[in-house]
Length: 153
Image (tube, rainbow, N blue to C red):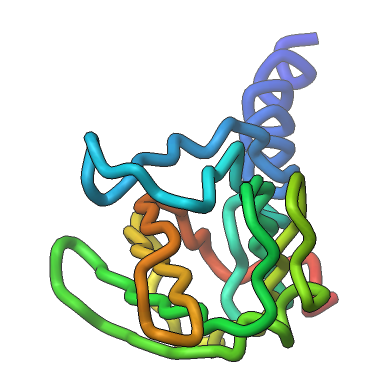
């Protein structure tokens, strides 16, 4: 009977490691009092935490008061405060253009290299229009977990 009770904490620990952690992403605007044309409602990351070498999707739910037919998505990533990565994408490859007035989604997927170190990262994302005017700028943190051992089985 004591062996069963000894195994329970191990089983719970393994379940916590293998199962995805569900938590809200705390999003902040880069400038607190700025009047951005695009308002970001929420950011969803799947899976969360991200597993190196596995696909990850960032979905941004936003709203705009005007039609946007072209733009850029600029992403900067930091690890423990150090800038580690930048990339720029055509906004219309991450969403359907023209973006109509109202609610829309921006979805970006990629596979992080298997050697990506685990830990807490911060991401700064800007959306720029055709004239390079900043439509929005948000910052949020995300976690990269250890490589999934289950995937290798």
